[in-house]
Image 1 (tube, protein in one colour):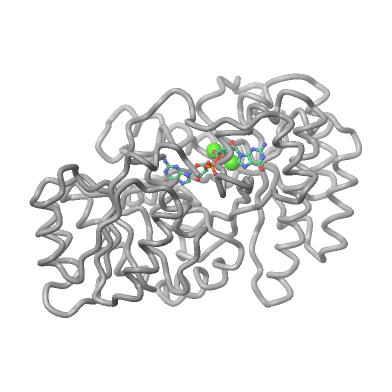
Image 2: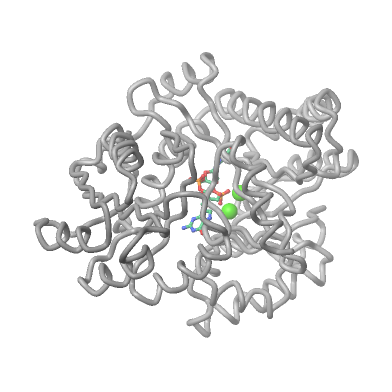
Length: 400
Ligand code: C2E
Ligand code: CA
Ligand code: CA
């Protein structure tokens, strides 16, 4: 649990008392300092006027008798609250898009939606999301995990993997997912990677064990999806420290064949700053490519790669860092950076992905500039494996 949660105020607006109670209990379990409930829009306005602090997190049902969810959001925005909004119930993604657009214009941010049956992890994830995008940026995460704590989590199988969908722009279909590691802490619940990746990277043994744990789970999961008829590409973040292990390509090959997953559907993501290193890395990357795995250059734009070197590296995908993506539709400089990065990627015959897409205006810009795939809160937060089939189904129906 994040210590910052104690300072937050949440308001749960739903006409069903059962849902209000359930979501409130889960928020309290996350350590949220103040949780208020309202059964409809009008009582929500009253609650806001009564509260001494602004509401930080607003959980709102869209379909309510009387003042509906959309009107409620307008009324709350008019009271100048700058909350992160979470939509309750299985709302259709198209509607979420529309509401997200509207909320943005009103100065609210849609953090995502949670569908029945509500689960603690979903609530924890949207709260974490709030800290990532709404709360003022801080230098250090509030919680840090020690090396031995991380080792114990790996030993006890408390490493979990969340998945964030990547959407193809051309036909709006889900092209694949990126695996993102989480750690389950006995007292604090689900911990985000910011709190432990740096510690993991401190020793090559630790980062290698963590990387193997994530690869093992994610590849097995991709195999399960495949057997249930869901053919999704899988991207996994691999640190170059872990790549130094010479038998890694063989190990990944072994995992893939056990899970029945095609090599061409697995992508290794490496950050730009890490791959500009040594010849040794080039050697291992080539061995992955020889086995038909795909390679993505992550956080592109932050690592000063030389064009000459980029040309020689066997990458199949270029992933533009979110710092150049978010807000680009309103910033001419970002647009120039995007235009040239996209052109570079295309010329080098790479799939171009934009990460961190949060707004529709940016999506439309990226589409116009020829980006192949989009990843970001606008499509989905990172979600549990069990939520992926439902997401794909809703997204596919929406695109049809
Ligand atoms: P990344 O590889 O750049 O992963 C994307 C991060 O951006 C994820 O954070 C994701 O939740 C976040 N994100 C996605 N869409 C949006 C958006 O629209 N807006 C904003 N503001 N953020 C968005 P997460 O899961 O906290 O991961 C953070 C970083 O931790 C990752 O950045 C990656 O560098 C590292 N990481 C995660 N999983 C692993 C892993 O298994 N191995 C290694 N070595 N590193 C990992
Ligand atoms: Ca990544
Ligand atoms: Ca990235």
